[in-house]
Image (cartoon, rainbow, N blue to C red; front, side, top):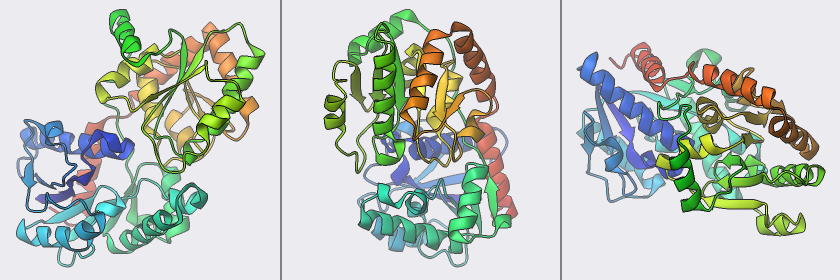
Length: 379
């Protein structure tokens, strides 16, 4: 079975979707070497494809269209042509924009991670929102099967895209084995030195964009600091810039938080586990997520988690995190105070999080995805 995959996503800087693409292909390569010798993933490379992420993997690369960075050109023409030239049996769009416009004669599967442009339209520039909404609608009609990462996302896809529920399969994301407890003081010290990170910190990891709700997080953290001025906990924000970040610096200055907030920028994958482990608490007050991979990674590292009580986040966190209303700064402040001051609560969240994270693996994600391929007749 030859499975076509868009390689434009294969870069860690895309965030959770990039992690999904990389880990799924890595798991496919492992299964091909042991149990599925006839499985042949074919990656259509793009200028941004990072081949080093797949070193020594049994993966076929199609380099014919590596020159094209255009999402529209690739999806409308090049991937369709590539399917024919590479004799693809099934194409899996790892997200809606990486899906061929025409898949006639071949089976197709698409992963819809979320429908954020339809849930939070104000969080996107108008043109970008229209393009994403059109892609979601198109692939929902065209694909033989739809994969989503959570039951919450499945409900949203049914409601907003009018896709029959029986065409949708829920397959959660996994958690890389690198994310596990075990603090190495020397590694943590070196990480702090490289990024200028304080000794005690609350952590946020994610793209700096409106749905991540950073303005409310800042206000909640400022309230926490005002109520507990004796605490020397800082707030570390780790993530690359997104669209519509808003007047972030102005809010920091208005709240007089310049000395208490560190924007660490994008942190490479190699540093992420230690960044999680070194934090006293991980805070993720996103307004909407299809899954919320950073929550799972933080729990796997043994870091207490505070996250939102909406969308997929309660589903991912289970009973292993404090859930708060992400629109209420006072709720965030109270949750932060509880975790920072209550050692018994920290330990409870730590062990519950570690146990919860063990329920998720990329091997399971890959096996369930291959089962979907078989169901639609891909091999």
